[in-house]
Length: 135
Image 1 (cartoon, rainbow, N blue to C red):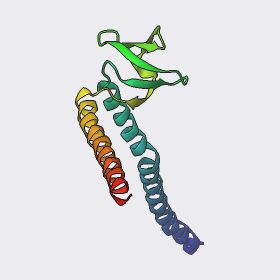
Image 2 (tube, rainbow, N blue to C red):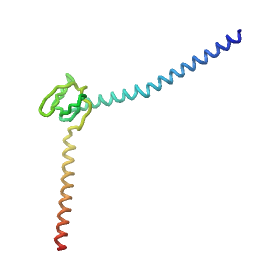
Image 3 (spheres, helix red, strand yellow):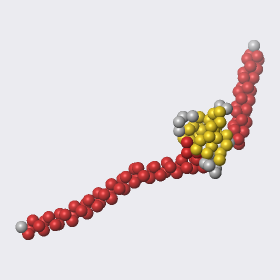
Image 4 (cartoon, rainbow, N blue to C red):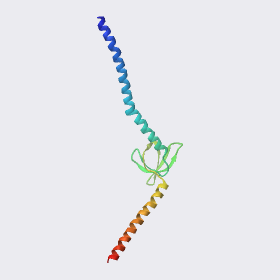
């Protein structure tokens, strides 16, 4: 009878350590698969909210799209221009920024487009001159 009692006592200590290790592994798995990615996503969303500026085209959580007309930092609200209709929303209602208003990028893109158009025009003129000289 004493042998059975000793065997039961030894196996109980081993299973409790195994149970603690398995609990730690389960907690680690849960943290790295659920909690950490959610915190990262929340941080990215907060950065997006802080970078909103007037003129950005945004999509709201209900699917409404429009351009930001003004931002009120005190109330944490934005006024959205949706085709001439001005609506006030909480900043948290913004799902994504569709395109950001950046005048310098727009101005930088214009000369590049003009150069491409000029190159096409020159090519067309060269082809026309070649065709005329062959006739």
